[in-house]
Length: 437
Figure 1 (cartoon, rainbow, N blue to C red):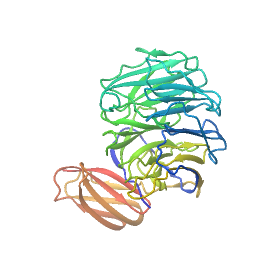
Figure 2 (cartoon, rainbow, N blue to C red; figure 1 turned 45 degrees about the vertical axis):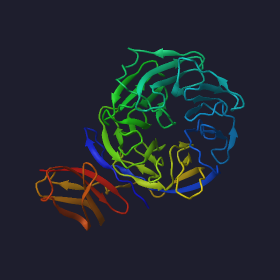
Figure 3 (cartoon, rainbow, N blue to C red; figure 1 turned 60 degrees about the vertical axis):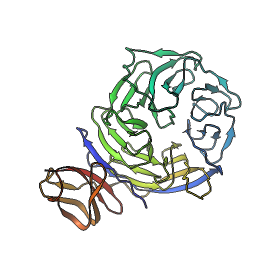
Figure 4 (cartoon, one colour; figure 1 turned 90 degrees about the vertical axis):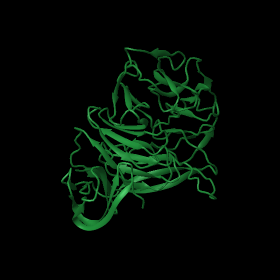
């Protein structure tokens, strides 16, 4: 079983006390097969029975919690699109730079509500009347590295008229600050009248009053990090995922449990593409991997992203929870040479395997740090462990194994500077930063 390794980049004042680790059995059913490659942009469950899924050129809907599906009409076939259903019959759909549509009859008919001044990128409706839209004009169009011209718009009549939110009701945008250009449902998060979304410069914009006024704060990721996904448990407990190379290899997560006052940032493996909050568990989040062929899976963390356990080995990009234990997720193509392309929709049920137990795997020490020559690694659990030390650019400079609860490393031959030390067992992976004096 493949595990995901994370690198602790910075620990601020954020404190995560001794946490509990949840263990699950996972039951998975394939509920629909496409027999082709088809990328899902967004999937929503507005209630425990209705689910809408947007595949750009197709829209599918389930009325029984994801067990069976029907294809409904799509108002406009676009490379990038976004869907936001309110209930079984009402939904809003944006086709990037091509239109903004609304249906009130389950997709049988669509009304084009696009206005020339708007280029809907992200949007959200709190109810059938109040909604917001974030548009992002890019020069040249389609280039995520191009110059951005942002806007936040507000509607109070179901999308027929829009008013731009300007300073001082929103913070000033930074030079070349943008949004995620092909947003899925995991990029923006809402709770009641509160909405969050992330920008290309590592900032989170938040409104407590349905988008009328906004403020911004940094997520601890750094100004070169493009936030691509967000998840929350309430307004205080928030986790974000970013990519510093625009679909490259510099993926990070950052976690706060005090509403953004302090953050803990970790480095995620190549290929991460989404995070979601696990309902009913305030400290639990899941991370999806599936954008890249070399990286796939669904992983759960209970400690803000320091450690993960694998739940499912499948290429995934987005999901929606129908209830506290059931999720529906489209797969992303694996792209294996010579293999038939067959994307599908999975329905997963999480079964709590045991009662919640205390995890001791995270309770280990690396000391002294900084160090001159010798470093000791001490764990709380007797077991078989492997150790890797890598430079800041990812080059592995040492690897070894040990059995027991402690091991000593000789750094006398290392050059002065910072390194990452990664410790693995069959159930656990974590990383710490050490400094050689």
